[in-house]
Image 1 (cartoon, one colour):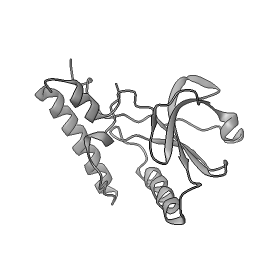
Image 2 (cartoon, rainbow, N blue to C red):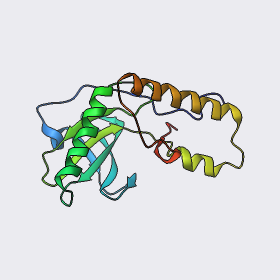
Image 3 (cartoon, rainbow, N blue to C red):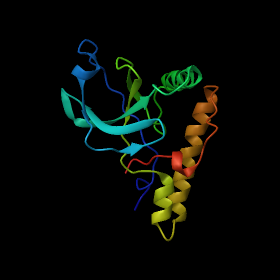
Image 4 (cartoon, rainbow, N blue to C red):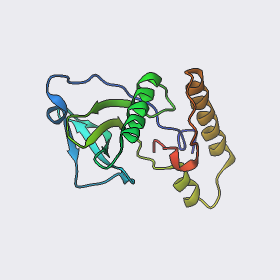
Length: 163
């Protein structure tokens, strides 16, 4: 079971297709949800010219949000852009605000689910897996702190796994 079983989602940053616009560039599987929240849904998506590479698209509903909520979303986008690439952080691949009432974020796809669910599934969480997870988490936290950013909501539900 090596160190690859429980690792934080690595980053993969690819070039964008600027001219086609969001809907001309991406295909979204709207029939299937990867996740839902109070103000957003997450679907799988892919670039039309590269269908084998999958991403997660988070569609944030801004219709019922006030200006402060929209400003917080914009701040989060700016933070993700400032952070750039790090192997322990989910990367922001693309953004789109062309649809009225929503903001779409294309993010790296992490298919392993949440750390919380993984811990719940196991009757015994081996020390080696916990050690790798903690090391990767602390490495990512040190990186964001070096950029002057603090997470403020670290918990197993907010940690995504690659596989």
